[in-house]
Length: 246
Image (cartoon, rainbow, N blue to C red; front, side):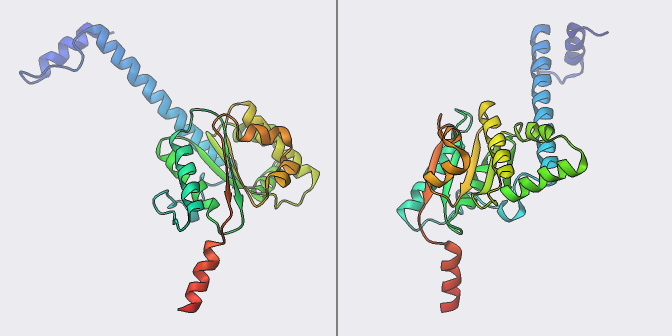
């Protein structure tokens, strides 16, 4: 087995004159190999996490419709939208400083999904794992566990491994106790593991507290978490109205 000193001497013999190897001593060479090994291990861990995130729901973390959503192409026409953009961007840039999540509350077409996807796309570009799912999709996946003899606990474990989980359409579920219990289990388990959750909803504070419970609500936006109210009208309706005028 070749020693680090032997490898360094061999490297010096084959290198062009005047060129020095990056590592000058055997200890430096060993430290470099160790750092490269740790870096590759971290890369493999992230690759495995991304693969698991795709297996959970049978698709990638952000749906095709929102893969091009960024902070730069979010349209701002009011102070409220400007503030929402600023808060979402700040959340993404400071991700990992705490385990607080975010709640985007407002009607359809107000840009909640765009900014949530912009956060997700930003984090994915930084090698974080992100999964955005709707409550109906989650419930279908849970039912597939029952039908296929899978463990619900293993699904919950996998949902806790992604860096950021965003749950859309909270509040439009059928209000069955089973769905309420699953939703609370997922959020509570992630928060207990200090993993943030994003919630997209059309419910206000009181209504969402009725769905999630006061304890989960308190923890959702603590430790760097944010709540943003999307109080303006639907962008999609405005665009449709302008098209009709034209």
